[in-house]
Image (cartoon, rainbow, N blue to C red):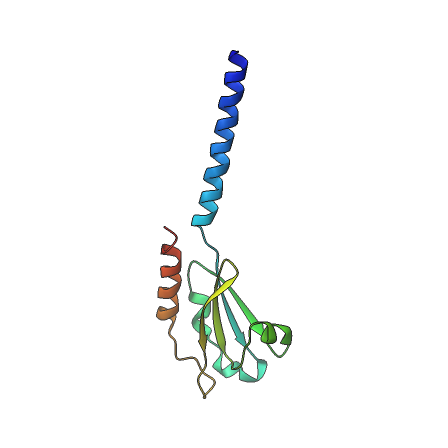
Length: 119
């Protein structure tokens, strides 16, 4: 009888651990910032993007990788898309002069809000 009790307690502890791990992974969202541009528009690269905190940063040259242009419907470069857990949540696009008017602070504030919304 006592062996069954110990087995159930161990089982309950493992289940609790698994539940806590699953909840913990939901609380730590993955934020990725992707900067889409093209070689011919290098002078309008968003240089401050590398200074963003608490996110992964990728750069994509749509001239070299046109499948990403089509997949993410990039119509103007540069375009910056913020993804949370793989889903697009915000997009910043260049104006007619092919430059982005959004600031590093605007993007960082948005990223911080995304991360804080999980708590």
